[in-house]
Structures are given as structure tokens and as C-alpha cells.
Image (cartoon, rainbow, N blue to C red; front, side, top):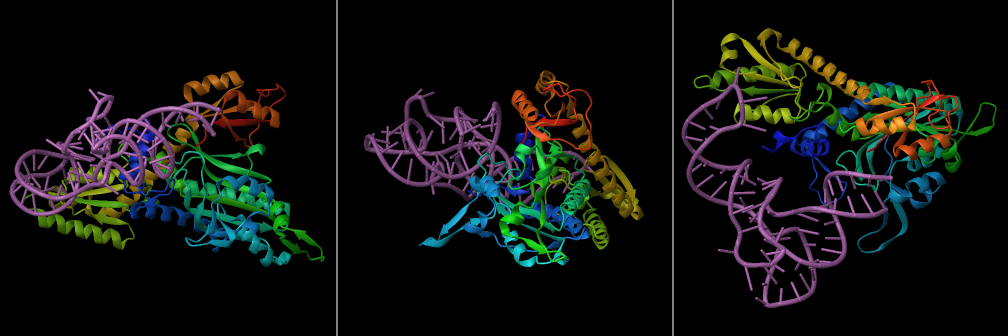
Length: 476
RNA sequence: GGGGCCGUAGUCUAGCUUGGUAGGAUGCCGGACUCGGGCUCCGGUGGUCGCGGGUUCAAAUCCCGCCGGCCCCA
């Protein structure tokens, strides 16, 4: 069959395209470029992942709200850098089928302008600060680059965007660190690896002071942005007139931050954790955590099915997402089917298990098969969830570290990239000129730097003392 | 931003060069047989050949435009 020839590392793109559709995550046949149908199975994993993030945000004092999808043109245009940055990819609504509208509306590509219009009404006093809100909504971006299912789309269907306002720049900076902490916890919960880099000035988010991005290195060794944390300073506050009154009676503009994560994280999770057989979901985002496969045998059909039902009820009662596959397919076919879909734990119940008071458990990541006594079922499964998670996480971090290379000169960087791809870090004096020259002479994109990581040696371009490492690679 | 490949049944695809009855596999439905890794056999179902226009006696096939998908380069 076709799936037999798939190889995640041999041909990642082909693997990815096949897996996400064959596993019932999405259906890309809907005839609008960059817009996908999410099937129930895929949508469930997305919701599970997003709720982990939403719970974290709430733990850290954020509240969920909802803001509208349409932005009046004059509101969208208030902040000039933002307008410039998003003008090429923002959809416009300007008519009904019958007639033009009196006023143009834009479909939110992200909700700064929508929210901050309201912030200016809501924020009056220092007592209203800090304000920490989030929403998880769809946003629209007319991507001019080529689209890629889930990873680069024109309708981002679940964009979790947080927006905060603060009284002081120090508090905004502190908020940036808090956001990074939240996002790191989120990716940790999914078993993903990441590097956190401060974006080069020339690539900073439209309308921002500075921002940090989380990057993962995909199986094809290209980097992908997993999430972004942005310090907006007072630019939007000034554009939207968001002021508060201090205890001494004077007025000041607020300091703002925003940060966002989208369904892209599911695309990355599938890519990082999957293998040639398909997806491997960590238990916390697996739509089905345990699949029970009856192994029927002449004279045993009823006993086998009865035991399956008992195990099913027991696991369900204990809060697991479990299902019995009672379809007419052969057991072997079912194994492949559920492995493709990434169910972390499979239970097989056949005549031997009925006779011996056991069940047979197979873990998805290693396909290791163990026989477990009936009274140990729950503890063994929970133990396996944990082991699978740790294994996936370790694989992801090993992969990341294995694909970050250090070079001391541009020539060396080029040589390494040609042989090994991935991410390369170069000692850097920190100047824009040298950063841009590194990009130009390697043909790679600057990902940023880690302000806490001090470099040794001299700048790969100018030869002055290096302060930092400049990370470069190819981006999705 | 530049270049290339592609679109035929739910899915994958043959046919296109050289215009003339759309064929196969898989899936799906019914049945038999099996069942601890995609078993086998029998019968059946399923097609505006992506959309629109042009050329022609005749277009899946040739030409043009659009829509959609994929890849490579910057």
C-alpha cells in the first residue's frame, strides 16, 4: 500500500501531506486555497491542546474575552507600522452580493486594532492595570507565499492571542518574561523542543519595540516559528489613545504586550512526534488515548467481546478517552488504522487473555507488546502514557540539539549548512550591519539571538569582539 | 518575488505525444471465509475527465483564461 513507502525523514513533505489527511486530521479538498476542513478527530486534538494553553493563561491571571472579526478601515489604519506590515495580507469586505457597503471592513489578521480600540475606553486609571486578556479565534491572512496545510494557511482557525496593558515599561518587560514562561510550559506539556530567540530588529513585528520567537526544527531541518511574544511599547497606546491617570493626577500612555500561538502547533506536534507509520499523540492531546482491539476466535467471540466491554467501562470510568474497535476489519488492519491515527496505547484482547486473566498492551512509540494482569490495567496504562511522553519529548530535544551547529566564520557556516542544514549560530558583535551581512552572505534567514547567551571569539563579519550568537536557518 | 510539475470515480492512477467506445487498482455495498500485523474468493456500486471559453464533423487529449494542489529557487 502507499503508506508503506512513506518516510518521515526521507521525504518529509510527502509524509506530512499524506499523514494529516489519511489520519482524519483535516480534509484539504475544500476549494479555497489555504483554508482547510478540520475533521472531528483532528479538531478534538486541537481543542485539547488549546485548552492546555488556555488553562495556563488563566493560572497566570489572564481572562478570556471575545472581540469581533471585522475591523473598520479607519480603526485598522491608526498605527502606521502595523498598517504597513499587514496591508498586503489583510482581506477587505466591501460589499454585499447586491450592493457596495457604505464603509469598508477588514477581516482581522490579528486583533490588536480591534482590542485596543476598546482598551482606550476601558482603561482610565492606574487601578485598571495591568489588563491581561486573551481570545482564541480565527484570523485571516492572505499569505503570498505558498500555503502548507495547518502550518501556513489563509484562515488560521484557532489563534490564541493574549493582549496586555501595563503602567510601566518595567511591568511590560516582566510580562514578556511571564509570557515566555507560559509558552515554555505549554510546549513542555506537548513534549516539543524549542529555542527562544530575540528577533532581529529588522524583522520585528509590525508596530512593536521588540519580540521573541519560539522556534522548532522540523524533520526536514527547516525552522518553524511556534509562537511569538511581543513588546509593543507605547506605539499602539499612542495611536489608539490608551491613557491612564496616575495617583498624582498626571496621565500616561500604557505599555503593551501581546503574544500568540495557533493551530500550527498541532502541525508541528504531528511532524515532530510522528513516525513512518503515522502520528504519535502524547496522551494529553490524544483524541483517543486507548483503543481496544478484540481478537475474535471461533468459540471465543462472546467471551472476548464481553471482556472488551468490561475493560472499556473500567477505563472510561477512570477518565480515559477509550474506544473499542468493533468493525469487521481484521485485527491486523485495525492495528495499522489506529497507529496511523496516533493512539498512544492499544489493548488487544484475545482467547489467551480471556483464559489467563490478562490483557495485551502495545505502546505506539516503540510498538513494544506486554502482557498485563487484569488488576494492573490502569496503573500500567498510566505508566505507559508517562513513558511514551518522556520518550517523545526526549526525541524532540535530541533532534533539536543535533541540528544546531556552531560556526566561527561565514565560510564555515556555508560549508556546514550545505552538509547538514538545520540551524547555525555564529559569533556576532550585535550590530545590524553585521547581522544583515551574515544573512546576505549565507543566503539564510536570521532567526535572532539569545540575550542571555554570551559568545566567545570574534564577530564572523567585522572581527570585533563577539557579544552574542546570531542564529540563522531556513524558515517555513 | 521567480521558475517548474500536476488536476480523470471517495482515494491512487492508465489513457493525452499522434483528437474518434473513459480502463485498472483501492475504497464502498452484499455474500462466503478468516481473524494475536493490511488474508482470500464471488457479485455489485461508483465518472459534469477541476471550471469556463476556443479550434474541430468530433476534445480527457490541442489552444487560451481562471480555480485548486505540490515542488524548487530567492
